[in-house]
Length: 340
Image (cartoon, rainbow, N blue to C red; front, side, top):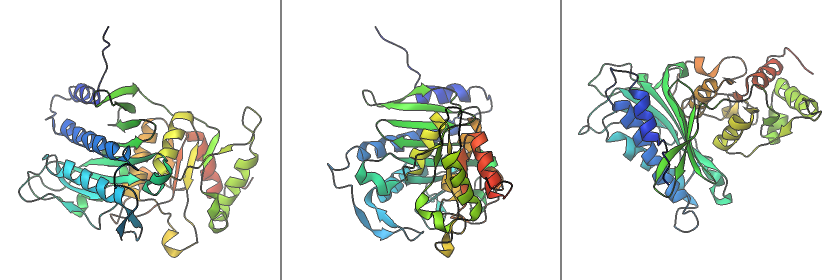
């Protein structure tokens, strides 16, 4: 007996049929991202068996030591995306500026920003890591190379966003503004298969995720929230549970499914961390788009993430993201509206 399965490609095509003016370029772009995810997944699963672990010997634009997998994933994403003719430019967390489309390739009407391998420092511990992506329509004239202006758009103008998480299974989660869908890679025939339809995040959860080793460097509002979370009593009569993996995409994915809040605030440990460490374009914006489509909320503590006007391709932002009620409570502490 055979069973019908809805693959990612079929789902994207069916979604695009709702728009008679669609050209197929958007479908091709998402298909290219999925292909890159399959390739990265293959090598992530080979870690320890092939020479893909360890330091690459260089530093990225943020002064962070690059892992071999960072370099490989970045190269894989760029190669998958520049050739198809769907993009006018792209930007990566691992690259200094925007990445131009080679002059001998066609130019498209979309822009893609991506973090090729979030959480890669955890790969040798076999922790879930992921690729995060964000898609915009270009705002400069068609037919010409894209510019930084195309990249520096607020998150609310995204037309799609998502991530591919490499864990016990490989899953691609994405939204085009009409709900959130998750597809699990079936290794038996190499296709992403629909596994979670119209994902919604619980309105309130029982998990808070934050790196408490920075407690002494946070503003008092963040410290007050954590103190409250440790003694808050939800419906089952217990405090909130602290769960922090240290891989953003893994922490976010768990909270998306089970409910909860993830916080990465700014801190005073160094001047560069005053506005947090997470990148607005490559991490905060796409995950904020996903969580809002799932019924959740994302802000920097004061302003919705999707409303922030970026001024730099590597701009950082504090991030409070997750279940709507949990994020609102955290915001109240951060804004000084409550202390207990």
